[in-house]
Length: 367
Image (tube, one colour):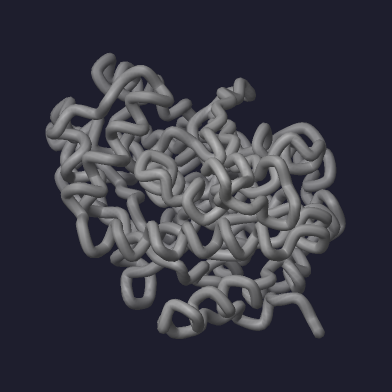
C-alpha cells in the first residue's frame, strides 16, 4: 500500500465516525431479532443452545436472506437454534459482535476493516466471502450525458468514508479532478446522502446522480436516472468484494464446529442461489419483505439482482485495494490488515464439498 503523510485528523475521525461503514447495508442502530426452531431430536453443535447470526435487509446480503428463508442454516445447525438479528448499519453490527450479541455476521468490507483496525486486530476475523459487485454510478440524463459531464455536478454517496464514497473519490482522482475528501467540495460536489432518502433527493433535484449500491441504484433508475458506470468494470475480472462473513475471534476459538456448520450452510446456499437464480431471487425478496415489511418491485429487484455476484471467495486482494484507496483519499492511515482473514474453516468446507480453495492474499492468520 502507498505510504501516507500526516494522519490528517484520522484518529479523531475514526473515533467520531464509522468512517468505513458499509452504506450498502443502510443506516441506524436498531436490530430486529428473530429465532428459528431447532430440529427436534438433532444433536447440538458444539453443545450450543443457539448461534446468533447478523445480517442486513439488503440484496447484497443474499446469502443470509436466502439461507434463512430456505432453512439452510437451521438444517446445518441441527439441534442448535439459529437466531437472527437484522441491522441497518455496519457500526451497529460490529458493536453487536464486540458485545457478544451476535456470533457471526454478514457485513461489508469497510466496517470489517474499520472494526479490525479500531480493535488492534483483536475482535473479528473475515471467514468467507458472500457477494461481489452491485454498485453503480447513475445520473440524471438531462444533466449528465457522459462520464466527463460529472465534473461540476452534485453526486451523492451514502456516507463520508464509506465503501462507495471511497470508490467515488478514487475514481474522481483518476479523472484528474480534485475534491476535498471531508467537505466533498471541489471539481465535483460529493453530497453524502443516506440511501433511504436518495430517491427523494433525486426527484427534488438536490442531487444530479449517485455512486451507490443496489438496490438504491435501481431505485434511482426507476425514477428516470440512467447507468453511467458499473463499478465492476473498474476491477480485474469485474470482481470486487461487497459482502463478507465475519466472526468474533473468541467464538471462532471456542466453537469451531459451529462456525463450520454456518459456513457449510453458506456454501450450500451460495451454490443453490447460483444454480437456481430465479427461485433464489424470489426467496431473497420474500425474506426482505419479512424483515423490512416491504418487498422490492420487479423493476427494482430484477436489475439489482442481475448485477450482484454470489461467491464464497472473499476476494481478499480487492479488500486490500479498497483500503489503499481510503489511504489515497486521506481518510485512513496505512493499515496493517495481516490476520484479518482466517479462511481455514471455509477451505475445509470447500474441500468437503468438492470446491476449490480460496486465497487470503497474504492477509491471513499466520501459523
